[in-house]
Image 1 (tube, rainbow, N blue to C red):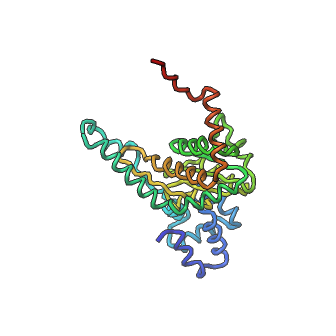
Image 2: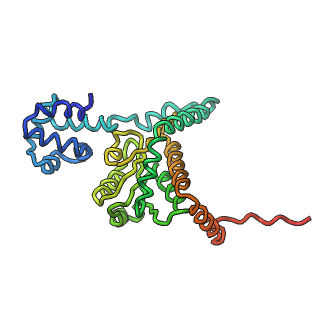
Image 3: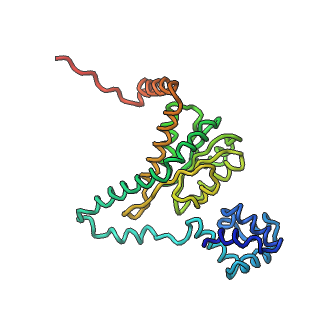
Length: 289
């Protein structure tokens, strides 16, 4: 049983002071994991001694142990290192099954992602369509997920913006968040600090959030209105983002389909501008006989 489920089940037996702590940690699990005990105490209007007593009442040695349990609930526990996984690859370059393993795992990832996110995709579309503006964020390995979403969605919707923090501009880009906007944000374990920061800023601004992530207990999913899950398994040393890109492409496909006939003209115009501007190379004309 996870720490949060244990708190829920034992809530009624807690004293009023401990129930106050319980309410806060259940509503703000990210703060428990990322914040200091002092900050959690201040925000929950409790003393550090009360936090320690709360943790011990649940059977933990102290607050650090409860914090570790919350991190484990969110998939932030010990993760096999990239170097450790790379050891399994060394010396296999001549193994004819090596690349075959990768493509087989990717096929399974796509199938699992399809099953996990098929129903949620329609709900995510409905949320995004209603938003006056849509922002997308993904950092490090998840940057391609956010960028491809923005690049393709912008072919038929102008109010789509990439949040990338380029040049130290993350705070400035977050100032554009407005109530009713939507944020599409991607990350997988170990979760990106910037992705969580952007999601928290969007939530504070009154945005609706679509998380593209690997677990319903991820920090992004816990903040999100809708979650699109993707599978990150890989026989290589680094997790795979292929299924994350696939679920994003499915999302844009549905958005275009639901937009109706007007989307055809907007896409035609965008494509024509790409050719006219020289961004796309025009195929050479066929030579005559």
